[in-house]
Image (tube, rainbow, N blue to C red; front, top):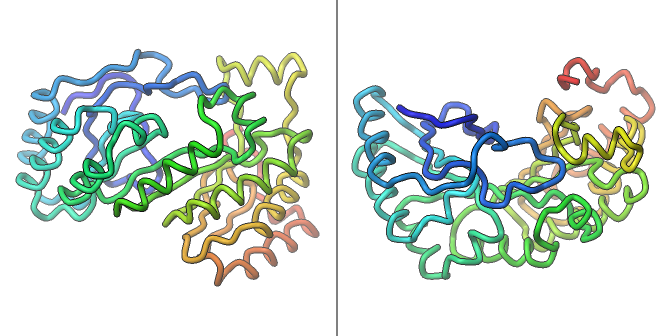
Length: 289
């Protein structure tokens, strides 16, 4: 197996076979993100990709899950993606799930027919970063897409039978945009009704524009009480029946897990308890700060 540069994957892909289909991220200008900075985006030669899968078959007796890295595998030509998925199915008949990251840009270039074919050939789910449903936050953070476009692309994925996991970041709007960020992010989730919703808490990484803004006072972090307030606002406005909600990343002060809308009241009670007893929150040492 050959890997170029740092390789990232969602937490739920911890035990997946990871093969780089592309290198880096096709956007890679988000102000808060430090990923993939050591390499330029590139399409990996197809034969190298297939060789890695053949090597993996020799190394591993059983592969349940496959994750297609790096940041935006869906930008490859559709026919090449079909070949990759056909190879996975042929080499690993026991495989239950194939997933990848996806961006609004890479979803937009895929036709409905192509997405349906990708699903038929085994692409079961994609992970997409919403980050915020607030256009002011998205513009400031240089996301490259407005909320309406991200929502539209999430709906497109779901309409064509591919499961969708969407993430957003608590605190991304700072104190000034706390309410708009929370409420509009909830509305964006509701409009997409994804299978999975994941909330991270903002962690500022060195060598990013956001780090510089924090140092010069252009941006301010939320304190733990503000994080809880924002989380409560988000939860109060969520109406995405059946979505699995997870706020259990190492970045999070508070752990919340459940299914919307059945477990919503219980999660709100957990927030209430934390607001009255901040000792329930994870310490910053746990969050790696």
